[in-house]
Amino acid sequence: MIELIGAEKTYPGGVRALRGVDLRVAAGELVAIVGPSGSGKSTMLHLIGTLDRPSAGTVRIAGHDVAGLDDAGLAELRARHIGFVFQSFHLSEHLSALGNVADGLLYAGVRRGERTRRAAEALRRVGLGHRLDHRPGQLSGGEKQRVAVARAIVGEPALLLADEPTGNLDSAAGAEVLAILRRLHGDGTTVAVITHDNEVAAAAPRRIRLRDGRIV
Amino acid sequence: MRLAASDVILVGVEGLRSRPARALLSALGVAIGIATMVAVVGISASSRADLLDQLDRLGTGLLRVAPGDTVFGGAARLPKTATRMVRAVEAVESVASTGLTGVPAYRTGHIPQARTAGLLVQAATADLLGTLKTPLRRGLWLNAATERQRAVVLGGLAAGRLGAGPGDQVWIGGQWWTVVGVLDNSTLAPEIDRSVLIGFPAAERYLAFDGHPTTIYTRAADEHVVGVRDVLARTVSPEHPEEVKVSRPSDALAARAAATDAFTGVLLGVGAVALLVGGVGVANTMVISVLERRREIGLRRALGATRGQVRTQFLTESLLLSCLGGAAGAGCGAAVTLGFAVWRDLHAVIPLWALGGGLAATLLVGAVAGIFPAMRAARLPPTLALATA
Ligand SMILES: Nc1ncnc2c1ncn2[C@@H]1O[C@H](COP(=O)(O)OP(=O)(O)O)[C@@H](O)[C@H]1O
Ligand SMILES: [Mg+2]
Image 1 (cartoon, each protein chain N blue to C red):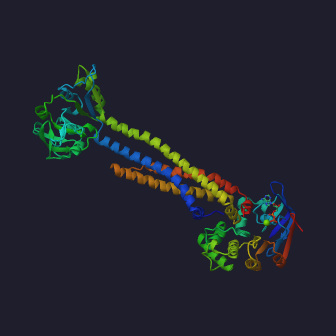
Image 2: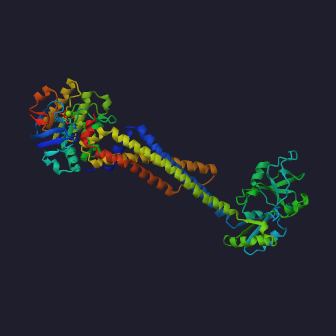
Image 3: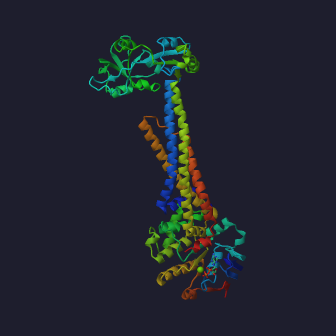
């Protein structure tokens, strides 16, 4: 599902965030990515999520070599195969939970009525069936992150990427979100989650430790 | 993967709805520009249509002959025979004349001499109304009998000033005269509006009028009018043609119709400047919007939006903004035109090209204002956009 071969990332200004990373993650795995701040975790997740291209090396996602795809091709890959969850939810304050989740299907070519129907279903799956019409401002942090998870999975992606999804949550809310991720993994979704939480990392079947842009 | 047009619009509307006050204010700028342009074109087209309509109705064949100045600087007089001479000119269809008596008219005998209300008591020949195409508003025009009696017909304005109508009495030259009729507006000869008209025989008999006409009106077929005009001065005063002034009253109307064009041009320029300022406002709003919404842009890219879709989204917002303003502006401009038309008693004319031009200008403003911010939004790397937490 994920294949990095000698992946490098050097940011403009000369920061070498990734230095030759080799990584294979098979379909259906759940991996925890850990490492100190600044070690290149987010950078690696961005490469995996095709939000950025490597400076050198190969990135292959769901069988597609990123180098061989143009902007539209990458966008389609993200729309159909990859779901993202971010530390700071990135929800629109002007839309209801349902509207926010439905936008997860906007670029996948799904019609409006169908988007809304599937969004309601995804919200029920994360236990928010009773909050469809609430706006983010009316939800707790844990509920917001669950809305963001629902948005990430509404298109039923094969790959779910989460960058410190529990970083802004208290432990109870964080545990709920992680339970949902684990359940998705149980349903067959490949999940890669960046975390600072040692307990979470310990509980994951596989850990990838980064330091100074290298896997250790 | 292309978005349905309805989704493109929906996302655009959503973007504007998130900051409604700002959207309305920047749309207002465009609205003011478009409203100005539509109103300017509408008002001038309405006035112009009305002037051309009047020209059509009144024709361009009327000529006005009046005495000028003598070579010695004194006031010239038209000979008593002038009217008859003009009637003999080939292609002349009708001739009428008026003669200033120099006597004021009053509503009663008790009004002080100074308050003459600017009304001219004039002798008039029977064919005056036909020549000027001035309709009678009420009562009767002078006939062979009443032009010898103390009977008057009031010009439209004179009737209002005197507050008199048919059957009323007015005080002229120390005697009571009876009003027999009131005229409508005399567009080609506004001096008639201010006149109190009596017959030539009555003027000579009761007011010691000398019988010299002071103005001759003559009408020729439109195509002959230039030829007639060229011979009129010599016909009226063979010895001193230079002391005769000949004019064509319809020229003033035509000039006014033409002047609306120049006026429209200037005001359209003002409207265009307003629109330009409105466009700058829209561009400014879009630039700020792109800066503020980097996270949203990054998120949309993560959800699978292509660069083109992000560009389209912001361009759509810009176009929606300007179209919102354009529609409101066109509505206001049309309303102003309608109000003006009602006020001035005209038919409101809003040319289709003005609305089409307004629409085109609106789209152009929206596109130009939106294209650069939209391109900037599309170029934002998704990671950078998401990093601004
Ligand atoms: N857009 C960027 N431009 C320049 N340097 C960056 C950028 N993003 C990250 N970096 C740098 O790359 C290194 C790795 O960052 P990151 O992948 O965010 O680490 P982590 O997520 O493990 O904290 C850091 O030194 C960071 O400062
Ligand atoms: Mg990070």
